[in-house]
Length: 221
Ligand code: HEM
Image 1 (tube, rainbow, N blue to C red):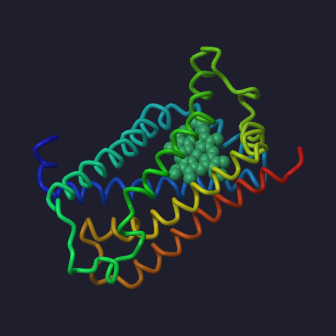
Image 2 (cartoon, rainbow, N blue to C red; image 1 turned 180 degrees about the vertical axis):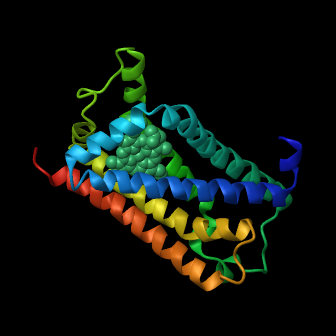
């Protein structure tokens, strides 16, 4: 671990920053995918742009991958250190009375999102890379992004797995988004407005993802 990230405060700060960055990415991702429910044509053009634009591919995508990996690795480092620092569980002090279920289970809700990401990369990201590299590992309808998404959601098992994951994403964000503001020291004066914004965002974004998944399941091509 680098010198800067040796203290718990610095690690929490870095965790908060990477969390906010991922929250921003989710806003972009949900907007682009929501467009698929309005216009397949615009969605395909946007996806084509993101998939082949040099700046997006050479700069933004690597930053995103580093952000995701960093967030998860740091979560496990912080969790392991917390457990080492508190090997015996409190007996008298009842944690449940002043913390939420979401805040106590961030590592598990995050773990489910991580499992979802593995499935999600298998569904969309790896076939896309395979297509670009010409490895033969590709999707059945390469280059028709809309059709790719539609096919993925025709499988009811996948639909249910995705919806369950989006509910866990909601639980994770409900504590994590506002927690990120606090970790980087933004939680004091503007607290009520920011807490409200974080809460609404944490509900609306996963609900939109659920809507997109259901839309593709039910729409007929
Ligand atoms: C209905 C919901 C969703 C749909 C339809 C969807 C669709 C897609 C598609 C088509 C790609 C491939 C883009 C490419 O070719 O490069 C992709 C990539 C990705 N998705 Fe999603 N996604 C959904 C939800 C999510 C959620 C909830 C997360 C995060 C928790 C997420 C994280 C990512 C990441 C990290 C990538 C790889 C980076 C990228 O290429 O943009 N997605 N998604």
